[in-house]
Length: 125
Image (cartoon, rainbow, N blue to C red; front, side, top):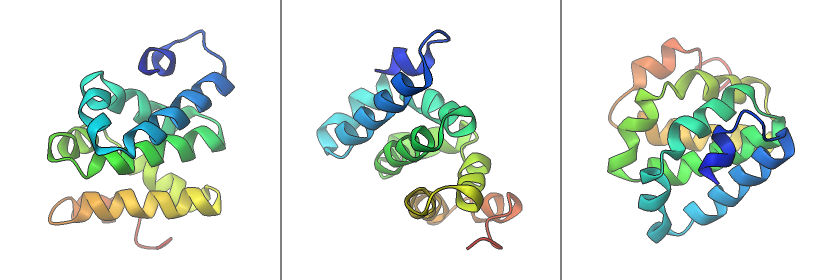
């Protein structure tokens, strides 16, 4: 699934479906380490920037589940996920906005508040 997200030849629908599958799998705590360990985070963040509306929603959902894991919290921030999450908050579907808020809340918990504010999250919140 992660390879499909990284693929330059996969079509948009395939990437959308792969992100949806990763989101569903990441809902189970036992799957989070294998997903993160497979390098999913940079691929999901890239999809937040360039995917379809549904792909962005699915990518944000997968990141939401991964963000609760200490091992992946910092990796999500280092992958520069905050700006595309704020963009999703501004212009995503209603569900995408809810998921983006959840991820930003997890990332803001204790840290990264300034980065989130500087990315422009305050106004759309």
